[in-house]
Image (cartoon, rainbow, N blue to C red):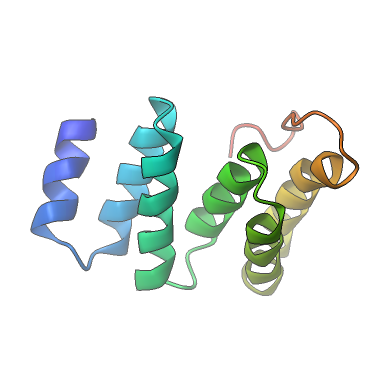
Length: 109
């Protein structure tokens, strides 16, 4: 999948969906820094992509980048309150200095 998304994002550099899928593939292979950059590119190209904001926020929480996660949450609150609730549930433990763990209801997103 990564080789396909690599080709796709190179061929269609201004296609937010290509960068979103690239980020998903990179996140699955635990290349979190590169995934974060891909999701950032996706939201820069398509600022109303709820999926990209959620994934960027989740990576931010995982990386301890709380301000970035809160910024993603702000965007999600405007775009998709249901997904914002999922990110808020993930962010809350980080704000309380607890271990990161995704709630079961939102882990498949």
